[in-house]
Length: 245
Image 1 (tube, one colour):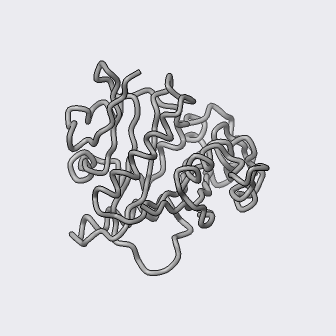
Image 2 (tube, one colour):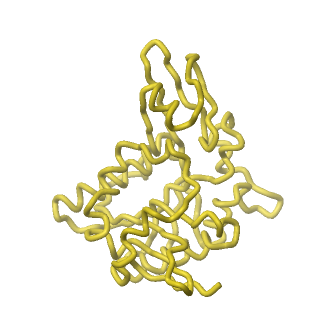
Image 3 (cartoon, helix red, strand yellow):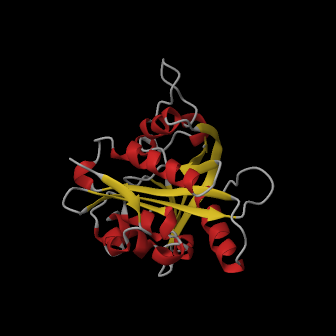
């Protein structure tokens, strides 16, 4: 299959396709309240240069990769990784400040092409695009794609687990390291998804009728459920990776 990779700024006609492409994200992942600061009506205009898109020979969208520029505060990378850079990016844009850093946010592959190496190609394209835009480093609060199989294992243990060849145990972290990325630290509360028990039942199809830790398919850690208070909260840890460009 012939794939052409470019940006949404060059292909604004693909704006609607960004949301119509079949994907594998669990429903609860689409309900982080912070996401609305970025995934809104201004996304395809204010951030079009930072949206990498891939199309096949027929012009159909097969993958997307979102990143966000922001004015980086002094200090270590934040514990609230994904949520933090979305807030910082939205605030930087609102103030008209100069962006001093850029972070990856999302790489989504059309479901029929999963496992075919497209994720690595999109990561490379995102790196190239960040360099073209003048950045010397691409940050990424990475969501390890096999962690959901071990939700009870602490991310601090899982993120630094390696194979015999020294590469990360997790396949997606391995792609990042092979591309030149370096694992920096865990972001223990990278994304927080709160909801009522009714909302969680709708998102997952699970009963959520007993207080405690609920293992949800696709979740990297268990969801905290409180029946008496009628809410459940998912606090997802990610892994900060730095890509020098």
